[in-house]
Amino acid sequence: MPDRRSPTAFEEPPLSRASDAGHPDGLPCPTGLARFNAAPQADAEAALLTCCGSRRWARRVAAHRPYPDLDSLLAASDEAGYDLPVPDLTEALAAESSAVPPHPAPPAATTALRAAHAAYESSFGHAFVISLDGHRPEEHLDHVLAGIRTRLSHDPDLERSVSADELRRLARGRIVRLLSGPAGPPGRTPGPPDPRTPGSGAAIPYGPGPFGLLRAER
Image (cartoon, rainbow, N blue to C red):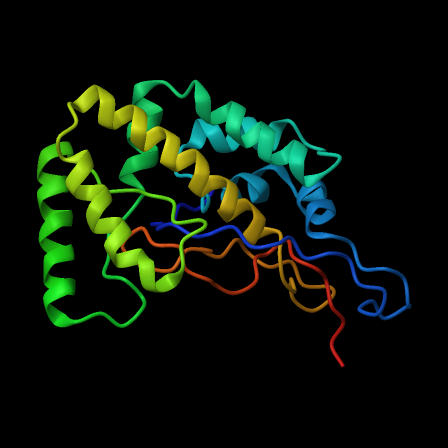
């Protein structure tokens, strides 16, 4: 059974590319996508579950490997998320968590955010999810607060649809991060870490994922 971790949201960074100087025999390093394509099914599913908490979604995305490029993988992620049945969407939302923003904020703003999260979770029964791609870090708090206030007026069906859209955006950014960065020393198969740091659903940078570029130890 793949591991499941509690996530929050992240912005989408550029995908790291293969290096010509990271492999001990001088060959180009395998890209994160190549490592993901070659991973055992269970490992791929476990890693994908750190991007979206639906097991159905993770199985579908992992089952369609190999992917020729990142765009194909992201398209498959979107497709698998578009028709998630309500129980699977509920499962994915249950895996999300709301937390305080990672960037310094005045105590009053942090208190307001916590109160807004509590009101949202009381109304809809799950954490507030939002993608903050394209927003500067100093804008995150205001954008999250505005999003919660707007979406508190939604009925449950509309908010479920909006949340599903946000989950798809979040999954895309998390997949990119999963495949980016150094993967660890040769000969060691890293387990799937949680590429999501607490942060009120905000877009937060984090460290390398298990399918990033393989670099040799010096």
